[in-house]
Amino acid sequence: MKILQVKDQQAGGRAGYEVFAEAVKNGAQVFGLATGSTPISIYDELKASDLDFSDKISINLDEYKGLPGTHEQSYRYFMNEHLFNAKPFKESYVPDGMADTETETKRYEGIIDANPIDLQILGLGQNGHIGFNEPGTPFDSLTHEVTLTESTIEANARFFENENEVPRYAYSMGIGSIMKAKQILLVAYGAAKADAVAAMIEGPVTEEMPASILQKHANVTVIIDEAAGAKL
Ligand code: GLP
Picture 1 (cartoon, rainbow, N blue to C red):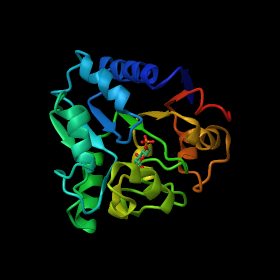
Picture 2 (tube, rainbow, N blue to C red):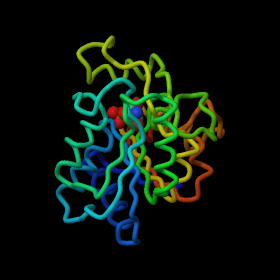
Picture 3 (tube, rainbow, N blue to C red):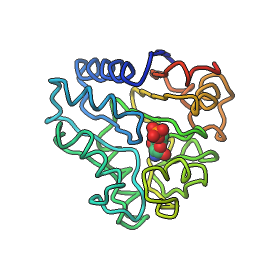
Picture 4 (cartoon, rainbow, N blue to C red):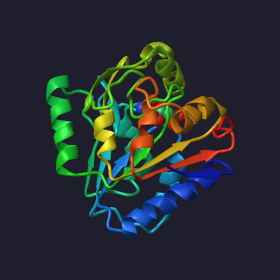
């Protein structure tokens, strides 16, 4: 793993942008994208840049089950607001939160197989989740329906009117789907992520810490700020 420690989220945005720009220069066509507050500064840099994605494909990690893409808290809506409206891709895939589990999980994994991801960006949950793959998710899992843990529901409640409105289920690429990406960029900021960052990089590779699998991937860059790296 290549670790880049940056001053703050803004500097992380620039560092993340560099990784994207390099991938584009090297011919990357398919970008795996993430939601959450962490990648926003990278998306801001992408929007401000002259990079052109109009002939490229994006595939998002996950979506809340039960929310239509028009819902303000859906990840489709988030992506439109933070990136796609300003920087359209030829095709942008996000799981359909309104579709049934069996059909949607198969369809989505098929999309990943038909469009191998060149660069996958990841945030990090406080409990080490990537995408919505909570602790205990098998490392060989493909796109599946997940039941969110209480800690994830609490962490995401800040975006909803109250905790009861946070969906309990989501569709997420599996850990096996994520590991198919040729290159991975994981980004984490703030003291709340410090334990997960240390376990991901220095701890044992265990399904109890989903992000620890990245130790086994050949091409991973990690961008952290000082607070997130404090326990390394
Ligand atoms: C959600 C998303 C993850 C994201 C995580 C961290 O659970 N499904 O993909 O990494 O939140 O969010 P944040 O970047 O806001 O800390």
